[in-house]
Image (cartoon, helix red, strand yellow):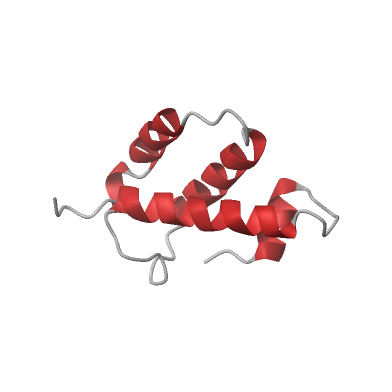
Length: 89
């Protein structure tokens, strides 16, 4: 959904020495958003709200590498993505 280069540009990272970490954070952000949306993948999602949610999660995970509050992040994503979530339980 979001490329490594787009993620680095969003995070304002110019060097290549953290590419592996940023890619892992991006994968985790996409997985978390997908879980909140109750979808298997985000490939078919072109909603700007979903893109913003992934970028928000990425920035949060990058900023709080050591002490991330995943519960608070999940609650924020649920609120942000409320209108986009699938209704299956």
